[in-house]
Image 1 (tube, rainbow, N blue to C red):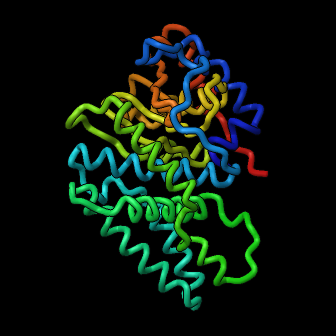
Image 2: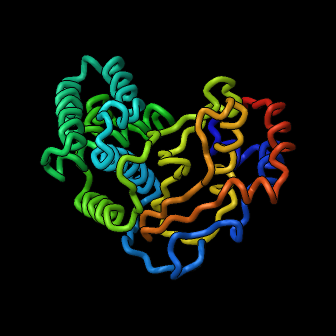
Image 3: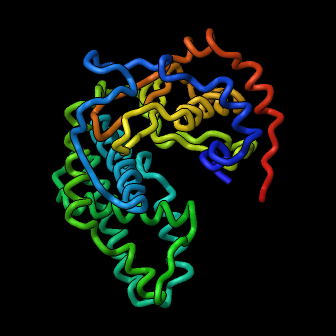
Length: 295
């Protein structure tokens, strides 16, 4: 059971976290035009199914990591989430006798070359870059969540990872990329932590990882069209902070932020404000005693 699942389904966990979850009014925005969570102009509209929307989000996570690593001159290996390779290795192990696995192997190995070249600042095909990120989103999702669809054959199952995104998905990812380049306030040579992971020592909530951290700000990417406040999303952010405290603070977090990709805005809350307003020590104590109940 993941952190997201606990926040959505476990009443004991909800009771602990909800007491310290920042309210909408606690958030700030770098934009002076529209306050956080208020209706704003959507820059990238979409109308995908829930499954495809999830793949778009994860694809964009991979793309942002590469974009930031390229800007920051970071290592390609540092920026590539290992879950994609783990997903590939699992598929390769169980479907090694399926002819289509050779095509997947070629695509995966080719993309790692594209990934490395892109981050080193070389020119690469946008289409190949997006296709590879889309493939990684599927491998990542399969590794984390398992198989939730029925396939008529092993060949069909393997081929799902090979198929490029539909044209509307590719166009959407290109637009999200453009908005990120134009709107995200990147500062040159600021330390970036890619997919920071929490709860590694105690596995108290079954694992939890954010998208990236720049300087002292922890970011969670949102690709939804919804602009309103969602307490469960805010709860996930503050739980990262609490777990980080319980782990001995490997990450020096001072701000928790959403990057709203379809609006090109950042909405954030400062840890100092939360410490003054909420009883974080009580939440830390309660969370340290929390035991998952596997069902």
